[in-house]
Image 1 (spheres, rainbow, N blue to C red):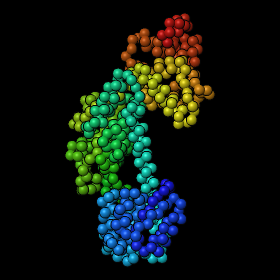
Image 2: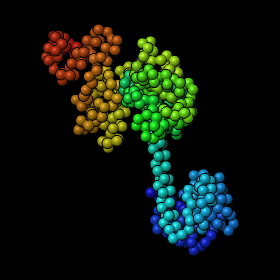
Image 3: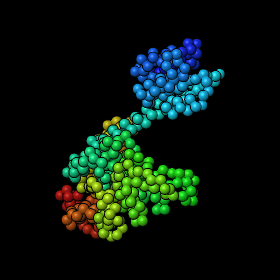
Image 4: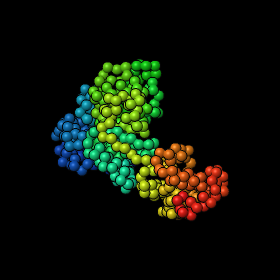
Length: 448
């Protein structure tokens, strides 16, 4: 619990006020300030009490009047009404007007007040923790720190993200798996006017086809077998924040028509329900597929494609980002070292060359995994070439996407096999059915 939690006790009975002060002050973290009149208390309200216990029957003002003035000043100040009479109607009215609790004076009053103040403190501490976490998330996804790169391709991405941040336009993000589509979505959300609202991510591929409608739009109790209670869907959960529909290209064609209606009408109905829920969230979608091609194939509705398109942001694969590869590698080294108290780690020149020449079929996600492993493997403050290991199964497929010359392809293939067989020229020559002298010449000319 937080220190110096100040409770204002407003009580005209001096003896009873001292009892409350003594009982609450048994906790050394609580400071009690007493007032005997409403006027005196209100004159000190700017000192910011953590909570107020308010005698309902004060000599100069009514409890309703004091409560109203407190709420006008700061609606978040918890007010506990203490009354000598058990009047249910009055209690209900005060609770509706914003009182935190209504306690009748009897032999259990001290314990009830104690428990109530404890609950107030726990909730305040939780709110503070949530606020700090939100601030940390906002800092984590600051555009200047969450997306690293100086390549022309990434500068275009940064420019588009800035446009997305300054507007409420729907955003569609495309790029290969592992290029950081969700990071971009979060950067847009946490730097926009919606930053303090929820960010709700939904991976379409992770939800069974028969449950996707309920997951997105919610359902009413009894709407289908297993629906034992009402459930709020992801769109409602997002509220006035952002919903991120990841891998939207995998959505079933029948579900696409339902999503289209929701986006067009800006409203939804829970499964099995008639109540209309207004849609207030921003929509950001992402996919690794060529959506225009999916539309041509008949796999994706054209009208939904244009509804989701909005501001398109295409993330380049890592192999097309040049020196960004090393910038990201050093970024991940520093990040991992800091999180694990490893001190400053350096990347040796040969290790840099090895990282730079690799085609990175898994993109940023693969790079991060490889870097973290290399940080673990080194026993010094330097990551050497042998500490960098690749475990990708798709490097050749990715290599073929690069559209290089035949000579460049040959160099890359030979380099791949040399890495795989620890620079054993004899073995590589046998595997590729080429002469050893050819490989030695390529090494001498530094083309591999």
